[in-house]
Length: 112
Length: 111
Image (cartoon, rainbow over all chains, first blue to last red):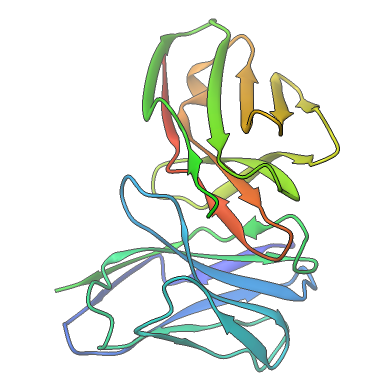
């Protein structure tokens, strides 16, 4: 059953703690992406990776970090430097950087 | 700078009606345009992708059109059903990797 999985579905953290969101795909896609979604706004790109061991900042990378050590995995760490981390986080992948993007089910992060 | 707008932000119609959702963009130099569906608290499902050289794409009861010169795309839903209730998002791809997103139209189909 091919697709993109994100875990956990809901995540709660105290302010000041780092937290890592998981994203795994078995579609054999080269490119992977992390987006943030806030109510009433379009998705905003945090980081993207076109190939293993390479990633680039998106529009709102401050306070976030990623790694791409394996083709199928692209974890996102929300650090304590991110001022407003509470949001819905979506991971996506595509065959290559110009291909159609496929999305995971999302992780809702709440920081109090 | 490319901006994508979806109006209205919300729409409620009776079951069975045909309806049109709108997406406008400011820069006509696009690679393609994609329509997505999002159910509450869920990820996005790709509905239709229109390449910049195409005028429309169809899938079942859905038809998406693209007019680059006027910076507009429409998503036509025929014979709407309560199961069509969701938020519909459009995204424009520039010549590189990046998608520019609209904020979405929340559609409610009343039984």
